[in-house]
Image (cartoon, rainbow, N blue to C red; front, top):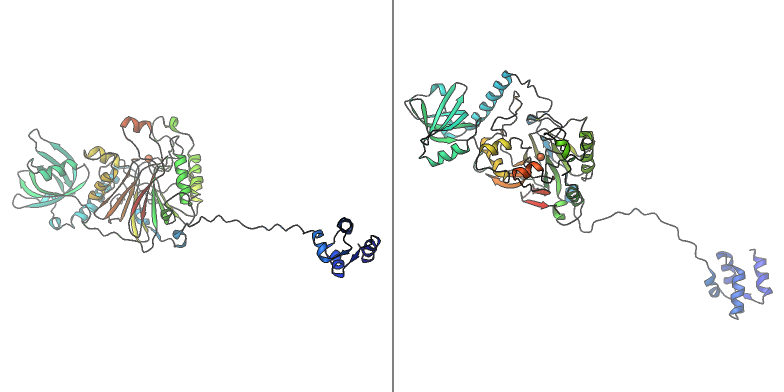
Length: 486
Ligand SMILES: [Fe+2]
């Protein structure tokens, strides 16, 4: 409205407008008709700046776009700010190096390798330093030999015999029934393991005075990280099985992202090792198709990929295969194949390793092995059971070998199953039961499973311990097992 017109309107209605009021009407574009009506109703003759205030129309507020960040109150994520320090030992990984053709020469070479490596470790013991070859043993003096166990047997009179062999020949060791400690060792001896024996020859028999396993030093001092970070151990998810515990695994992933309690641990997790059986696979055992929710190996890894992509990317994930995965059945097994497992290779924080594998995390030497050979170990040693996998894992360390009993091992020119160096952490899966112990300074961890009880396990009377997550602090070596079960 023009100034003259405004002025004329007020004067026509016998109203005066203050000069500030006039300016306000112009500036705020006040509706003059409304002002005149109100002034008449209120018997106001002077329209002031103050009177006009109620007619000022506030402009609508502009919408401001603001990115909303959901900050979990009080949650510290130290692992996010700590740089990853991960060294994968490629020498101990068979990937791309398999030369085995399964011919007799390969087997001869494999057993020679196994013997040589384990004999070298045994010779480190003072009383085996001068161990002689079997062909050189004589009746004259005390003698020590190192041999691979071919067979064990007992006589009706209670004598126990071990037939052993080295590259030069064979020998029978006699264990007298009155030597309790030797009887105990005999009971836990399995075929194909390499032992040292000291004793005296009597006719064709070596009368054992002492039997020694390679073992690890009594006081192994494990390496510790300088940073306050944690390792979480997973295995045996069996994605694709209708018994895969999706709800519980989801709880674990949500916990990693900050939900729930023990945020002091979730925020420190920098590494996850997965010791095989990521998916249930196809054709692993007879009639498996009846146990599968996803009867397609590609879809199984695809589904797994969709779970693992939810792991925060500052956490490094080290993946080894197991006997249900898409790799050869014979150990040592190479890394998962890129074509079938593309969704896993697409994840920037995933590191593929073979089975077994060796990886240093902030200097803490970790041996990851699925544990396929635990079946033969448990059936070969009466004191072992599926419910206490950590005790079976100790037997690997005593023998410094991941397949003491020969069973479905691919005979490579190098024996990848020898535990040459003593690890700080030994992580296995396979038996679907959690277990944790410390053996001579080595943290022995079995990460259990994320699969419910199978019919086979039910028939065997084996009770799995699903949805339990061992978490180990690499700085102070404290181990906590978290339950994600309902
Ligand atoms: Fe498994």
